[in-house]
Image (tube, rainbow, N blue to C red; front, side, top):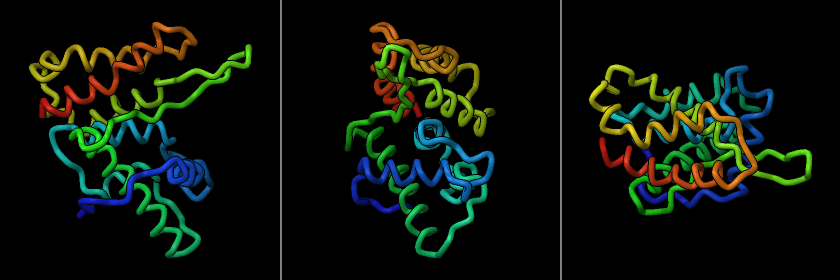
Length: 178
């Protein structure tokens, strides 16, 4: 059972979870943080909920913890991230996808939504039979945005940034559909 009012997820928490996901303690198929956030967003907003043990297994790919305390801390971070996603989708908090960033040759940093969107699309596969043709038609605009960004390399321009800015609204539409 997930806590109703967990401590809000912080940037320090994100960094700790990201560091663990990138470590050798996770299996080879462990998700990166941006991908995991997209994946958990579809789990939180989709037609059925997965048990936390199931999505954690997929997220970490059989982690090996150094101690019980580390396991408790890391799994607690994952649970809090999931609860923050749910709260954001319900409107209790602001929903903000966690994107990767790219440094271009000019020294500028820009957002990269591709991993987040790919995580969302791959997560939809868990519920393939429930994402019917009628559902996909009803959600054509928000899903179209996600598919577009999942297949589009990051670009340091305003058009790409505006597409990324539309993702929270697209997620709200998907969440409220179900």
